[in-house]
Amino acid sequence: MHSGVFHTSYEADMGLRPMPAQRVRLALFVAAVLIFPFFASNYGLNLANQVAIATVGAIGLNILTGYTGQISLGQGAFMAVGAYSAGLLTLRLGLPWGVSIGLACVITAAVGVFFGLPSLRLKGLYLAIATLAAQVIVEWIITHWTALTGGTEALVIPAPELMGERLNTDFRFYWVGVTAAAGTALFAANLFRSRVGRAFVAIRDQDIAASAMGVNVFHYKLLAFATSSFFVGLSGALLAYYRTIVTWERFTLETSILYLAMIIVGGLGTIVGSFLGAVFLTLLPVLIGSAGQALQDAAPGVAGLVPHIQQAAFGLVIIVFLIFEPRGLAKIWRNVKDYFHVWPFAYRR
Image (cartoon, rainbow, N blue to C red; front, side, top):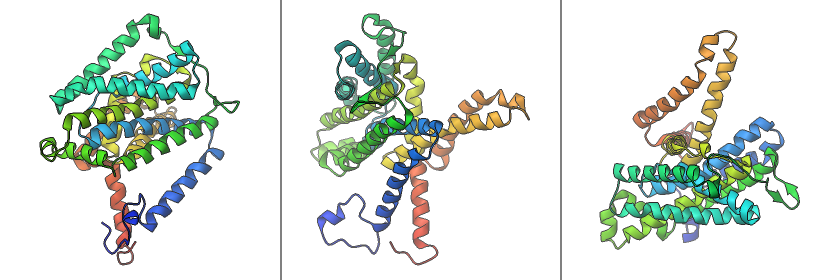
């Protein structure tokens, strides 16, 4: 709601952050991101890198599920394609890590288009099952095509280098992860201000009506799969170079469910929701684990149940948000902002 704010040009009306308060919040957030690594511990930087990589993957999935309405349970599979493609291009062909990541994203986009073909005839639960088949197929190929992937053996890839400096520390890789997350968020924000993004949203709202208005539904569905898979592959490739060890166990169905939970908890169809969901579900197991360690002496029996509590909390959080706030943390954040627009003074920006 932007009551009382009037723009005098089309450029101002279409600005990413047209309101002064929005620009101030963005400036403060950017400043915090830039300052954070100089004061954080290695453990804090490790968590921040995980959040940055998860944000890239969550935005990619949100493009497909939140904005286009195509449910996907193949996130882990597409991340695996990106990770293994990047690792193999470096190990087998000796390509630089930046080139390998770019090609891995393109390969993942092509795989996403292939598995998106059923979306012409399938939707809802049926499409989710089709993408679940992608998860199973890709996982089987990775573990059985030993000549290419090494099977169940892990791929060990060299740490990336930039201007002669090895990015093998949490501090150095932080800048790569943050740049990738910021670039992905900026691209997605502009995508849904364009004709293509509006076609995605029209398909989500009602594909039959979109088709009647001249939207090529099949074309845009495949484009949504390609765009989403591109960024999911980027997330997988970044994870591969961050860990320098690629193994299929990082990309199971559990990973697909985790990323789907991120966009549900964070907020479907919002970029900020992808970030908030990534932060929340990355830190939740850490907080529960820390609580378990604190109780280890006082209540050792409870501390032993921490792994089970983590799984139960994961499911409980999803259920609670689906019941009480289906629009996720992004909606809660919007409610907080709206509250302070009218308190303690009259509404103004």
